[in-house]
Image (cartoon, rainbow, N blue to C red; front, top):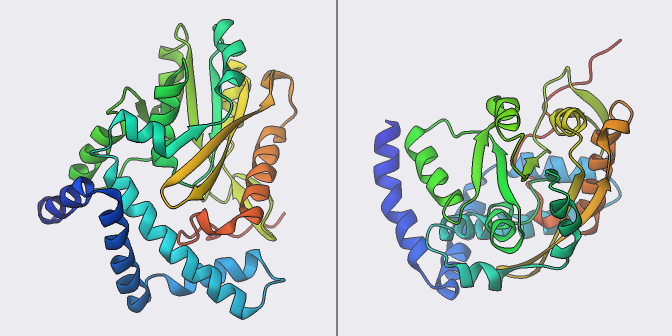
Length: 288
């Protein structure tokens, strides 16, 4: 069944990836209409928005929901477009405002931990960092359950030299790379298990993965936040913000809390481009 899904879906994905951008976004508009009519995760999206923005009216929540559906479809077709994008298109579509921020770390042969969330087009940010900074980018990710689509995504993500490693092999990868200068990227806003670190995020009790903090502290990798903006449809900027020069000197949960607050600030400023359709708050804070 997994193979059938792949072989039926791949021709459509390949055709999408081959379209010029104007046609690609026209297709995105059609897909968006169909998905909205289907009601795909409508209640999940609106519930997440209501709880995150209790001050907004129901009409404002509906407007945000519609805007999110449009962006979600753009993100989907942009992700598929990665399969066929050229280096020149990546340079045009994602601009790094301050690549020089990383140079002092690289000159000292310091590996870094790059922290970001499911905000903006994280699939395009990987190639941009690889192509426009001196670092070897290594992205920590969760493999897809379908092995056929997993191989497809691996080929897409590694086209320009980015390396990827599954979450369960992170420590092994860091140990193996101890003599290399790498930027280890953590997409650190997934739904963590109930026994993780708990904080308040977007007005809700939220469990937070501490892998970024634990590994950055253990290896003393400077922590750099990747701030991003969508400038227009299919165009983004990213900016590096150094959060911690010496993570080994931080207190427990300090890095996790700081990352959560920084991501929250971006989401409040521009909520549409965060991943509202995932079940971020599916766990309940344990009682003491």
